[in-house]
Image 1 (tube, rainbow, N blue to C red):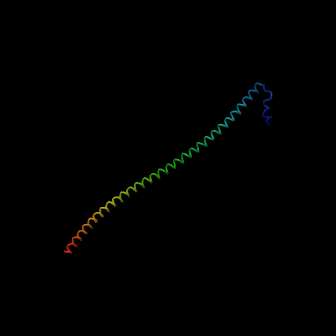
Image 2: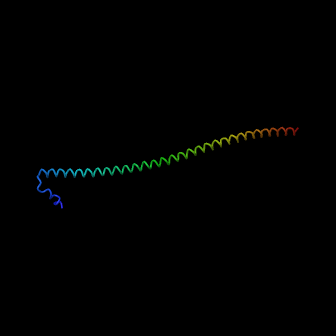
Image 3: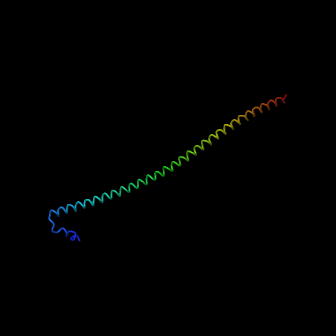
Length: 120
């Protein structure tokens, strides 16, 4: 088959044959260069897709972390409010204990006084 491809060159001058050979070599080089560039393009496109997926994944992770952070902030706020309420309740109860302790001491004194009166 290659003889048929070369057949059209028969009878051409050596100068023209040389020029045809140069052009064919140039075409072969350009084809190889095009293949290399096509491969580079495909490689770069694959890398770009991988980066896009990575960015999308990081965006999703960021959104999840933001939601989790918001939830934790709300939880901290609720815990702080609960702590303040418990602290207030504790102060109220300590105050009540102090009042009752004072009343108890007063009652003890009254009892001691009454016992002293009974002994007389």
